[in-house]
Image 1: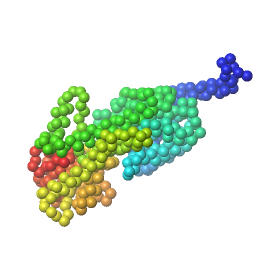
Image 2 (image 1 turned 120 degrees about the horizontal axis):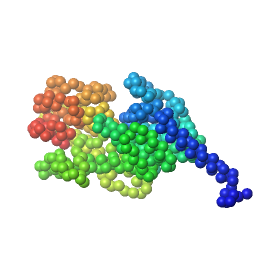
Image 3 (image 1 turned 180 degrees about the vertical axis):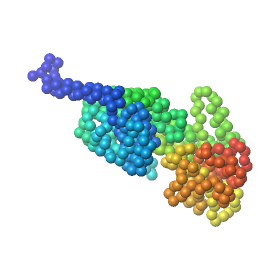
Image 4 (image 1 turned 90 degrees about the vertical axis):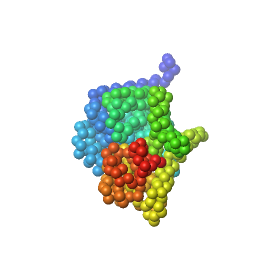
Length: 438
């Protein structure tokens, strides 16, 4: 028997039931978000997940931050942040109706994407996923990853229908470690869902503690937006680093040129030279773009060239340092070099993909004895940060400023008039004859 519109009554009944169930799940979760009764789970509580956890907790949500590290969990819990508990007990995911995945997405030695941390987090999420839950991926991935990798993995939970049985969204992280002006709350949040329902729910969640939420038409557009942001920065920083020797050949200060160009109120965004970009995003994300583009038979030569320029930058620093050593100290069996700063940017303790560490390794390969001073990194491997004493400064042949921390005593540094290679333009503007640029 067919109904008047040609449909099978039993199949119509099932469809109606699923639609009603879906609407009910949406209504329930929407109300939980509104009343702050939704329990939020954050998988990965580093810079990104930690900021998100605190934002959600401040908004009134009960938050569990999941980590493999007991030390990290204890460190968070000692701070006694209201509504926020860090834990190594992954079974507590079963209590969460909103699960945010904020794990790293690094690259292998050959620059290919390493999705193992994300896949591990998705596998654990699938194990404890309950009907009507919202999963939000914040980890940076190539366009198509949420739809083609995350969705099938979450469906192993037994919940097959996104929008009807669970909800899946992507919202790229935009956390800038050490930035006191832009935080999780006042940085616009890009949000997309596999379905309109998923997008709406994720938007409602973030609107509870983020000033501006930017809905995007598709998951792929949101995924690509993050890749674009950081590839744009890599390309422009590499471009400036490549211009440095040209400016030097003209007798021109590249920093002055950049600052003059930046007076134009439109169409120009200043980027500055340095020893090479670091951190988890800028030197990593472009390779997710390149990998996916190659699979599609598309060549992105500008991005490839930018990556090569950035990889060469630490080598240029070391070459310059060796030139200075030979010029100022003559030929010695072993030189001593002091690195100022191990972190990838100033005033934080993050050493991920730091150019300083690459410079250190290259110097040691040249039989140079390396030590370091960094107020944010008390120890690294088997080394400890040395104090900037008169003895320390006098016994080193060259000092390389690799990170421009603001709490370094630069006056004391220059008082010894030791050769200084300033990769961050901290001292060169003062005209000291013993301070060199890259």
